[in-house]
Image (cartoon, rainbow over all chains, first blue to last red):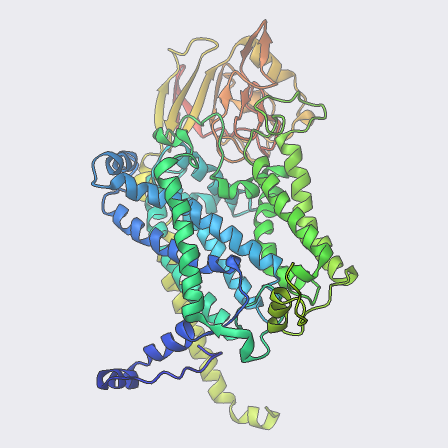
Length: 433
Length: 195
C-alpha cells in the first residue's frame, strides 16, 4: 500500500527480527493507526467500519450455521427448523444471520448515499467507487443465494423467478437457465450449487474489501467539504480519533441490530417462507426481500421481458458510470444548492421504488384493492414506471446538466478553514448575551 | 520499437505468441469440465419420462403432475372451452406459434395445434408461466369461459398478471410465449407418455 510512509520502529529484538522478514506491523501502523484522516469526518463516515463488522458477523454466524444445516431438498427445510428448535442457541445464530443480512444492506445503502451526496466517486476516487459497486453486486448475489437455502416457499419461488430472468437473453437464454439450475427446474442440484457459492462469495467480498481499502488509502478519504487535504493540519491520525469514533458508531449500530434480532426477528422476512418449498404451487404474492424491492419495481415497470431484465441490471450497472455522468467539479453536496435538492429527491424516489416493488402490480398503490383493468388508475405498476423513469433521468439527464448549469457556493480554502469557520464564525470576540 | 528491431526479434515473438496460444487453448479446454458439470446430470436426465392414465379425469377436471421437477397441467376440456379456443384468429394472438414440441417449430397456434392426435378434449401443457416460471392458476383470468359465476379453463399467473386462454395461449400480460406443450404420445386411447 502507498499513500503514507510509516515511522514504525520495532521495539523488541523479536520485533526487529520479524520486521526484517515480514513488515506487517509496519503496514498496520502506517495504514491503520497513523493513517492521516481528514479531521472533519462526520458520523456518515463510520459506515465503512460498520460494514466491515457486519461482514465478519455474517461470516462467523454463517460458518457455524453450516455445522447444522443440510443442503438437500428433502432435508434443508427441516434442518433449518432443527437449528431453530434443537441446536443450542441455534435460534439466536440464525436470527443474527438473517437479520444481519438486512443490517448489512441498511449500512451499505447509507454508505452509498453518503458517497453520492459528498461526491466521493469523483476524481481521484473513481476506482474506489467502482470497486464498491462491485462489492454491492457480489453482496446481492450472495444474499439472494442465501435466501434460497432454507428452502421455504419464498426461497423456492424467488429462486425460480430470478433465475428465469436469464431466460430472457436471446438465443442462449434457455440453455443458460438449464445450466444454472442443473436440471429443468430449481431443484436439488440448484440448492447444492447455491450453497457452495453462498459459502464462497463472502470471502470474495472480503478480498474486494481489501482492494477497496487499498484504493482508499492511495487517494485518501473524501470529507464533508469535498475539499482535498492540503496540509498535515487538515488531518488527524486514524487512531485513536477514528478508531474511537467508529467504535462508538458500531456499538450504536449493534444496538439497533440487536433490537431486530431480539424483538422483531421475523419482521423483515416473509411468513410464507416457513412453509416448505412446493414446486407445484406458487404463493399468491411473490416479493423479494426488502433490499431488492426497488430493483424488482424496475423489472416490473417494463412490459417486455428482456427489456425489464435490461432495465433492472442497467439500474445497478449505471452506478459504474456515475463518476463520469456527474459533470460538476465540486464534490460535496453542501456546496451545491440545487444538486442537494435533487439528491434528496433521488433518495425519496428510491424509497418510492421500494414501495412500488412491494405490492401486486395491478392493485392501487399502497392498497390491497385491485384496480379495474383497462382504465387509468394509480397502481403499483404505474408508480413503478414513473419512478423508474425518474431513476434513470437522475443519472442520465439531471446529473450531467446540473454540473453545467448550477452555480456552486464558494468552497472553503481548506478543511481547517471550514472547521474554524463553523466553530468560530468570527475571530472577533462576541460578547456573551 | 523500430521496424529494424522488430525484424530482429521476429522469431522470438513468434515463439512467444505460439506458446501463449497453446497455453490459452489448453486453459480453455481445462475450464470446460468446470462449466459442463453445471449441466443436468445423468440422474436428472434419467427421470425424463412419465406415463399418465387420462380415463379417470372427468370432463371439466384438471390434474397437475410433476415431470422433470415442473408441474404439467392435464385438462379434460369442456366443449365450450374447445370452441372458444378454436374461434380465435391466429392473428389476434400475442404469440402466434403453437409452442408444441410434437409439431414443427413454425406451426401456428390454432386450437388444433395445441393438442396431439386431434384429441382436442385433452390439453396437456407445462404449468410454467413463460414469463418468469411461476405456476398459473387454473379456471381463472380474463379468457376463461364464463358460465354464470363459474369460470372454466383459462389460466392466470399470480406473479405478474399474465392471462392465458382456454388453449393455454398468452393473451394479456408480460409473458412472451404460449404455455409450452411437452413432447407426449398416446400409448392407447386414454393413456399418454410425457417425455
